[in-house]
Length: 358
Image (cartoon, rainbow, N blue to C red; front, side):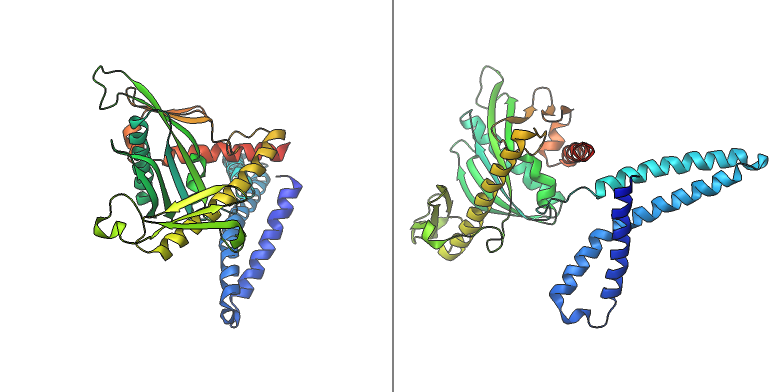
């Protein structure tokens, strides 16, 4: 372990002791905001310090075993202890490096998921519906909540566009690598000749923005229009001007929301989506500048490129960014994204580690 990492870990150990003292104080609950802040900090630091303690213990165990090597009767046992101790050091050291990587401040946020049909006509809209179901099933497995913000159904089924909010701890951390072009290869239900068609959809995953802290929305820069909602919704849908369209004049970003029954709710939802899109646009611009000097394998912000192909005839899904192919398309389309998400996160962490070593 290099000196800078050891110094950082020692500082964290000292800070954890300080936090323990502060949180055990009888007056700490007098300020609930400060109490919650310190509790969150402790929850982040404690696992790292525990790993560091295990690392130091392994070093002590190796040192003890080395002292036993002078005894002929204990040499074999000591050699085995040294080998095991060094293996533990390597494993714990690698895990510590990951724990010390810069944290994405958005990782714990809720997200807005946008899926848009692309090339392929009706088949693309059907695929958009399949993708949305995949993400909903994944959210259910995580015990997250899904709220549809707006949708534009296709006559043949599926969606021309659908926007949903996914509410749950770590939603962005698990799904942030889903942004990009998704391509499907399969025989459409309407295809009489049995020919394989290729269609595409675009997925965008954006962390929910804190309107106050993250994005300043100047009312003078917003045009807010109301209109009667269209589509399914029974007798209520066309009786009131409950649908809301907000245009952000500086960027030209337009958000519509009509799924809520009240204009107030639709406006609030539309403002949330608008804030997320503006923040996402700012992030994409920043990442594009970074990518100009150092190409990033993941998270470059370029959504125009194809990131994944779903080949139904061959039962495989290929993520082109990390050259990973899995022959479990039915399970993945049913929301089993854990292997894909873990592989993408591991590759991202490996890239971060490589950048630290440069």
